[in-house]
Amino acid sequence: MAHSSFSSKGETMALKYRKDEGLAVLALSGHDDLQRLVRVLTHDESDGEKRRTQQLLDDPSYRAAAGQGDLRPAWKAIAAELQAYGGDSIANAWRSLTQDHTGVAYREIVIDICDHLKLGVKPSTDIKELEDQLLVALICGGKDKFEPENLARIMEEVADGAGLKECLQGNVALDDLLQRIAIDAKVSYLAALAAPAIASTTLPFLARLTLPTVLAVVAPRMGAALVPGLNVAAATSALMLLTSPAYRVTLPAVLEVIRIRRRVLLSPMDAREVA
Image (cartoon, rainbow, N blue to C red):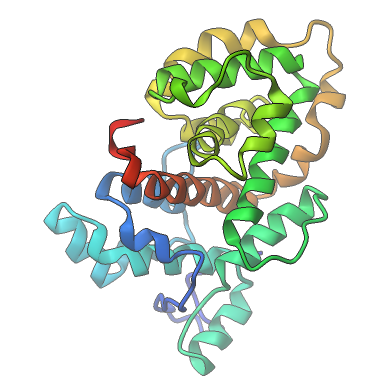
């Protein structure tokens, strides 16, 4: 995957959104959530500088929305930027000329990440199911660095900090929580909050996704929960397959979309009141 701002002729290639069931949820998200996603797509987490390949900040619809202080009208431009990062630059240019869109569908981006994690995902019409499998993989990847009971404790503290403690019933067992991700909207949202924090011990570029309310309860425990004497090389496991430049954009962006989708799903349950 490689996203380029230029066509094969060296001309700037305009963002063109393709209809995408996986990203339609952005139309229901708020300004703050979109702003977080934009930051991931347009700025390098290591130095805070604009990404050389980003196009979004120059897109007319984005600039107009940003000028009004409300990014919701620009959700398609934001989605198109993510789609472009998931595609090869030459293929993107060809699609722009022949198919009136750039980039690939969100589903393809998620499947590509899952394939690199060697998850062996099953073909599914439900994008949330694919996302759930990714969340479980990222949390389980933490077993290389944390004892299972400490992982469960981290998720419990995240739930408490995010106002979701009522979704945990009695003693918290990690395996039970992971099984409930697919069937319990609040546990799924909890996983979307906890997964970046847990995975960031191996992939530091995910730390920026940790919400302040989550960071406040997780940070003090992260060091104490590490398994003593762990071989660092073994701890990296399959997650290290996602350290290439392309995944440093697509993985955090997908995790932001995952969090947004679960926040929207919780809307009838007063999701706006949680972190």
